[in-house]
Amino acid sequence: MDSSNTPRTEQEKMKQQKKMSQSEEEEVVDLSATEEQMVEPPPRREEMVEPPVAREQMSEPPTHREEMVEPPVAREPVVNRSPVEIKSRDRPMVQQAMRKPPKGPKSRWKLLWIGLAGIVGISVLFGIFSQSSSNGSVSTTSNQSTSTPQPPPAPTTPPTRPGVPASTAGALILLNPGVVRQGVSMGVTGSGFDPRVKVDLFVKQRKTDRGQPIGLSQTDKYGNFYGNVNVPTTLSSGPFFVEARERGGNKVAQAAGVVAGGAPQLKLSEQVGKPGDLITVTIHGFSPYEKINVYWNTMIGQPFTTLQADGGGGIGQATVQVPFGAKGVNTFLFVGSKSLSMVAASFDLLSLYPTIKLSSYALRANHQLNFSGAGFGPGERVLVYLNNTAGQPAAVIQTNQSGRFTNANGFMIPFSLRGRQTLIFLGEESRASVAVSWSVLPYMPNAQASTYGGLPGTTVSFYASGFASQEVVHVYVGHTQNNAGNMVSCFRTDNRGNAVAAGSYVVPGDAQGKLVFTLVGAKSSGTTTATMSISAPPSPVQVPAQPPFTCPLDNTP
Image 1 (cartoon, rainbow, N blue to C red):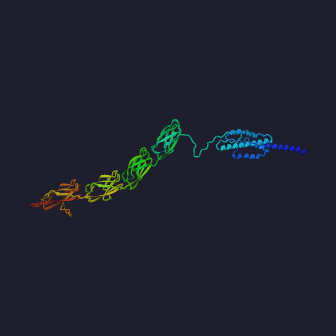
Image 2: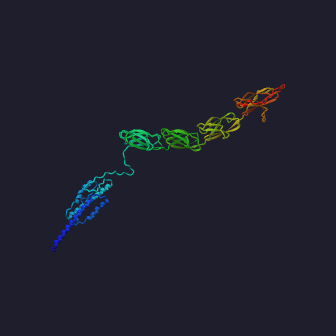
Image 3: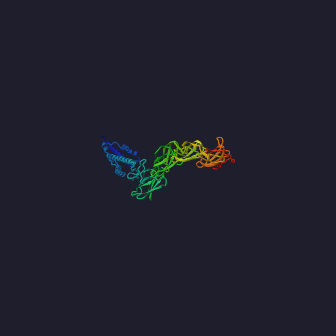
């Protein structure tokens, strides 16, 4: 080897080492600048993956393999540490990485590994805190230098579950039971009020109503109370609200309830019958003490009867009379006057078959005919027609609540009726009808003269019976079927149709043999005869001729 070449070679090696030392110093400075930038927390976690890339770029294969086996001393996991602890523990690591490394190949590579390990540790720590911040922990991210710790921001309200409101403490009342009827008792339990104060209770049909006072309670030392109130009967069916107001305070609580307008229950003792039958009714489920209107088939018009509910809103037993209606299925309607609750019950209505009994089935004119009947509608009028239903009824009879009548005054049989007749009885409302046949008997009077025989010039009077009461009887001579004859006398019967020594007639002078008198009732047309024998006088009898006779009783009632 040439000795001249040796100094050159050594000089070149020294220059080359000097250049390498300068480049390494520059690289160390650049590393410090890089670490100062990396100390600040990245805005997003995705950007934290860049340090490993920088590590790959900065790592160069070492000259000696044994220098690469040294583990990074600052890369230890940190779990559940506060931001202040993290910064205080990692600050020496950062400061050590920022120090100017000593010269020498082995020391420089060691410092590079230490700085790189610190950068990776800081990146991991900030990633952990970023993840913790996203899960609801207090975030420690800041735009300032890591040398100055930042105060944590104010804690935020943790999110609540969907549909579950945040709990708030305050006054509370509960109703027991919550479904009630008008007039019944209801329990009210309150809590959360001030101790030993008075609480006024109000009831409302709607939340916006002013409220009707229904009670007053006193809280105990814990602010609780319990009381019973009566549900007003004025509340209609549906929801209502009870409000508790603390007297002298601002605590108010409200609870909702429901007035059941419901379906009352009904039971009939009989479901088949005829108008006028009495049936027993049992009812439950109406408002206490309210009137229950009873309708038949329709609610139009007035109810045919009214019932009264007891304190429990029911009726143990009540009697209802079946009204008139069409044959077949009809309906009872029971409606509460306040609650307007309604319940219906079907009733199978049977036809009416009335019966009639007459006081007599054969009697003479000018006599009273009376009737007894059953099977008509309750409390209805029965119209009595003679022979047909045209024209005015001959009599009107009122039935009782059982549809009966007994020995009711009918009518006086007129003298114009003779022979067989028919009476028709028709219920005015039920339209039930029945017909009865009967007969008008003729008058069959008896009469006789005051004497059975006599001479001309004898005055004769008459005795009669069997005529109509207070009837005028005309006396005829020479009466035949085709000839009325001559009226010679008349008289009026008494109340029983009898007459004694009534009328007067003078036998004419030329009368001989039998003299027949015919007596005819002016109203009853009853006819009878009386006969007397006329003896011949020993000498002619001069009897003045009598003028035609006119009955003076015909013009008097």
